[in-house]
Image 1 (spheres, rainbow, N blue to C red):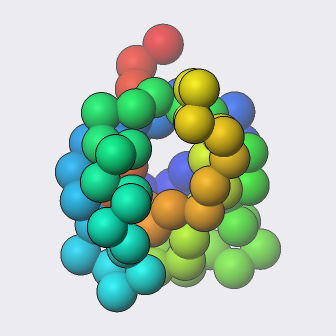
Image 2: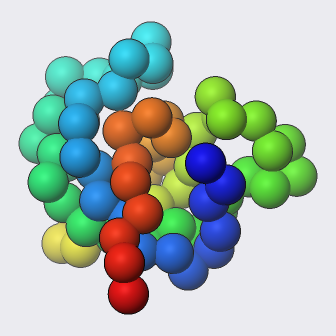
Image 3: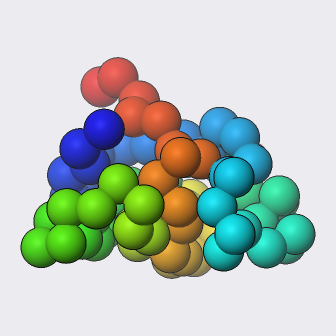
Amino acid sequence: MILRRGQRVEVFRKSDDEGWESYMDDYIGCHGIITDPDTAINDPDALVEVSLQNKGTHRLPQDCLRVLDD
């Protein structure tokens, strides 16, 4: 999955990534916007920066995100 800046996403599940912390479980179901997709790296395992509604901006693993339709 290629993520682009400005795309709307949902944190739809707990990540399998070792960087997933237990406090991130509270973000499941939250919607946000990709603010830094790390396109220079273009690594599907890289963390991406997401601005979550009412939760601030966080770096999250890509496998917990899904793109929302406009």
